Length: 186
Ligand SMILES: [Zn+2]
Image (cartoon, rainbow, N blue to C red; front, side, top):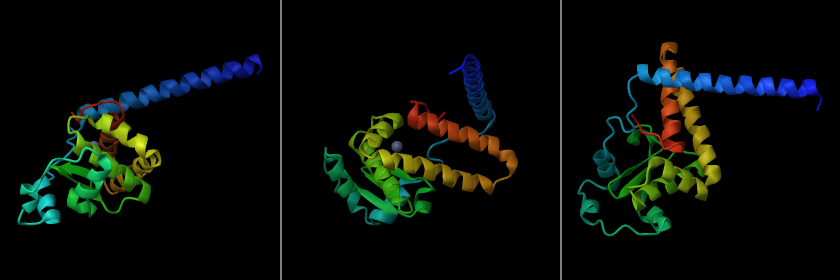
């Protein structure tokens, strides 16, 4: 590579890094000015559990020891539900059960199912720990989940006024930090 070409590469690289830093700074500023992100919102575990597992709540009393093997957990404790039943989330872990949105694409559903099962096996694991563990089992599913979630998010944001987009972007950044960088919801 000629001296000139090399210099151009360095300048392009520096501009890209500065651009990225500015974007992150913008997202952080957006977060400070936007309503704080609450993972669950006013989602009710009890409601989805009763609707899916039964009104008589026998499931509540019959809970025996959680299987140590996550595949057995998937078989016995993870249920598919309509996305609207779980407030638009991909999946949630509630009590000793988990619920996964039925509309997820195939690989993404496998990933979310593994993810929620891992929460059930060990509630102490952070979102980031669970995410990477599940990604180790379903790497393609994780990628598909990310793309599908962004797609759903963009579609949702498209229906909102333009003025709300910075807060939307800030929220996506918080979600990214929680799932990949060990961040908190607040
Ligand atoms: Zn999770």
